[in-house]
Image 1 (cartoon, rainbow, N blue to C red):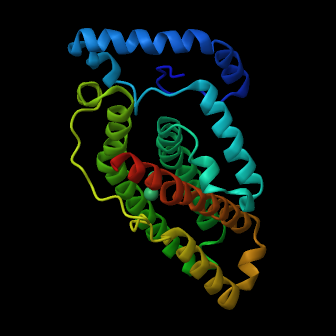
Image 2 (image 1 turned 90 degrees about the vertical axis):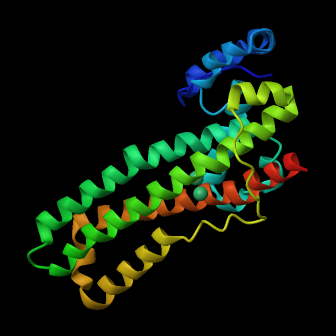
Length: 250
Ligand SMILES: [Fe+2]
Ligand SMILES: [Fe+2]
């Protein structure tokens, strides 16, 4: 049950309404496949959707699983999450990348500016926050660019080849270079978590009063939340996405 959708809104009401139309979605998928099989030039229409067609009903179920894990990280069961179609997982990961860069990091940068404006004179150490965050942004952007340029397109290609045949996969996803799918994705170095730990230690030891300042609490709260979010994202990539890719690669 697959339907082509660009970036579905995560509003549960919209998802529910659209999921009701699943029969239409099934039909649409076949029609879309037939269109492209009949005329490969029409793949240009599909190419603007990223990454590949996703099922709304599966997306809703997947998001429900993710929300459960957000509430209680001990309920992260890779084998359960691996049952979802790969495009649904990829779609979530793509959106999450965008969310980190366009929303979470800017919020954190803004909070750091507010903290420096309020407390920078009294605590000169805070001036080091700016280069730390700038370095982390560059690191995250580069990691995301790399995944979206090689790992994700290759996995999309493998999935489409398996589901619809290689000719269709090439028409829709091009011919991405094969990459080694290691059991663990060794690109994840947990820089934010370790940087955050370091910052907390330094402030606790040298400037404990700073931790009581409201702008400092806001910033650490946001950094903790992003760190937890990223840890889940990395587990999804390492323990769900890569194993699915390895199974598809054979
Ligand atoms: Fe990622
Ligand atoms: Fe990653």
